[in-house]
Image (cartoon, rainbow, N blue to C red; front, top):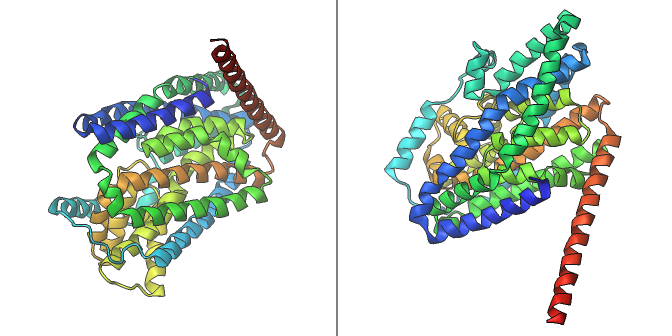
Length: 438
């Protein structure tokens, strides 16, 4: 299914999902199985796609020395951007103060869920995080979808291939074929995206209803405005420094971004985004390393939301944090938000664990539970856009970004749009002629 046509089908699925969830809530509540099936189809792609792409990208270039430099630059960039995201979240939390005068009721069930989240905090220290990065079994890492563990294994596997040399060439050729097959596999699976998105949206609307949007309007508005400001200030500046047109990049990744927004799942958009960024001019080894690593260390949207959520939780209870307390909380969030990509309700788990460790009330997290999916749609989309921009930045920093390839991609996209425009105009003219003849 071609990109533009798929985007149209996804938009139609979104609208139909909202209508169906609003008018037939009892039936629509069960429609989430369609989204689960689609997400499972995506998950079965990720491990072989990531493994083959990263190994071919690293071993195919045969330059292992560059890998350490790329890794260091990637981590530096991630930490700078996530720190900015934290402070933007703080700023908007102070500017709009979404927790003040919040009158939504809380249930015992919500409190119990939040207490369970706080108790299930993923790792307690940096040492635990480092240990969790190394897989005990690559098959276990692939079955659980632990991206960082797959990356670590793939890097060592690629180094081993390079050290063997010609003997490993047949296996490298096989992995190259596997990479091509998996990208084609991705295109086939994407044909089912509109069905999965319909199920996800219909179920969300049926469960939450439209009334909940009115009660939580200030919180939703604050987060989405903060996310928009982050994207159109920080990320646009990063692209300008790299001399890459942000508008063209955004249009290029519109399909995976819409997919991420609709499903609130980073995994759903990862395979397609990796394919597009490679076509856009980023080398395969950088795409294969930066994007999956970014889903652990560069969750821009989620990080911004965490800062905003902490302030929301304290404002509800009338607690005014000092500058020192805010900085300590932000430092804790920078550490605790790493290494738990793929965990359900990731941001809420981190928020609950962090608030609990500072002895702040968890009521705010419980109040955010009903709209977590709506908030997750926005932050997941920004996570995706942020990681796509990161691949461009690292490639430019390495002086390895292919500007000619980017220009060819943009020109081809423009030609397609012009062709579609001419076809639409031709159809409209034919309709007018038919109407005139009748």
